[in-house]
Amino acid sequence: SATKAGRPIRKMEWIEPESDFPSPDGNPPLKMALLRV
Image (cartoon, rainbow, N blue to C red; front, side, top):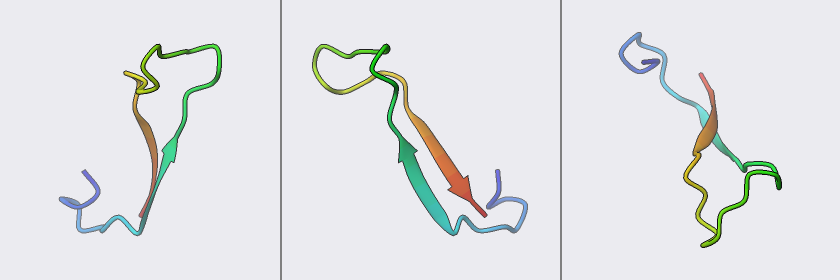
């Protein structure tokens, strides 16, 4: 991981799934994040 390599995470941004990957309860099972080190 970035932290183990001595590079702390500066910013994290959640990436929402596209509309063609729906979730009936509004809580999508696919979790994606953009990490900036």
